[in-house]
Image (cartoon, rainbow, N blue to C red; front, top):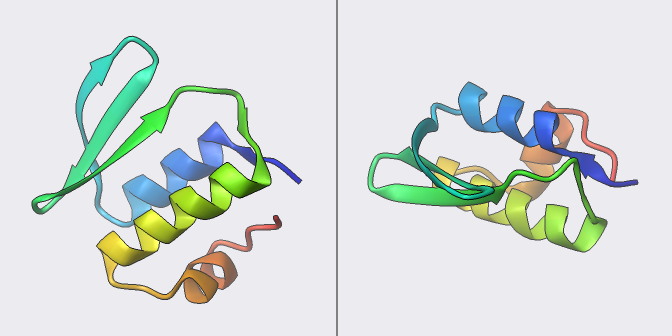
Length: 75
């Protein structure tokens, strides 16, 4: 099941990431000195979504499984 762009944005904002800048369809969100670049697509394939969730979890200091459970994400 693909992960939607809106779900990624909800997670990022809930974890305290703030919008920094945008270049074409890529948006940069930052938290402390760490950043996350997200392409503005409708959906992300499962492999891409897992990679993004892994990066978000590392930056937020969480385990990937905990992040998936907290936000009830189905991959």
